[in-house]
Length: 325
Image (cartoon, rainbow, N blue to C red; front, side):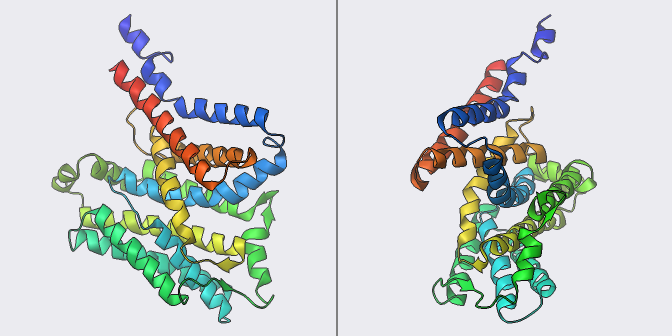
């Protein structure tokens, strides 16, 4: 009888897996009552197109890294370097496809450099990516005369931005479809392919994975490179949306990406990062931030609200699970 109760949907362990959904429902209800247009189609469309897409793509990269037991503090650098190279080439008169390829290669380089520091120099992932964060920030300032934004002075490249960020397919913005493709790709990588099993092994017990025949350096390199390339995609989309390159703008994604990924872990019994959980965490943070903005909270108080939300969700989830045990 006790076993039946334990495994029922009403057990504390099962309820802990639904904390994120409860929190999301609470956010939607509270702000729909306290604001006039929170649930309007226009507002929801804007949140998804302008807030969810970019953060979700960066968070998918963070999901891969955290699932492997690591952390990447340089996701903002990957975003910014991709945007910098992409926009610089456009401003210099090069074609859009070349700019996209070069931007993604710049992000790839950031991921490869992280992998080199971690695998070859044996530097902890936290310290390695922290160092890359500082280096990348300095490189951006040096490349832009102290942080001057890069803007285009001609309308010659307007079609580029029209295709990348302003176009629609079946009624949905193109960036939403790009997010869908990225989500499917990461889902297949983590949950349907051998790479996902290697990542899970690295996240659980790296030493055991090594003695089990997993080529740890190679798989870790893939982890950080995949993360960086995803962030590079977000960087190109970001610069296309704002029609300019703004130095250090990618840093704004770091904390929210970490928060969304860890919120997503509350949706699984083993507390492992998943694609669905991360996307749910992104939506929760995005709509929470939008609601706080609509009620008049400034950026700093929004950060307080987001921090409290993350604490409450994780505290309830892990607290209920511990109580059940």
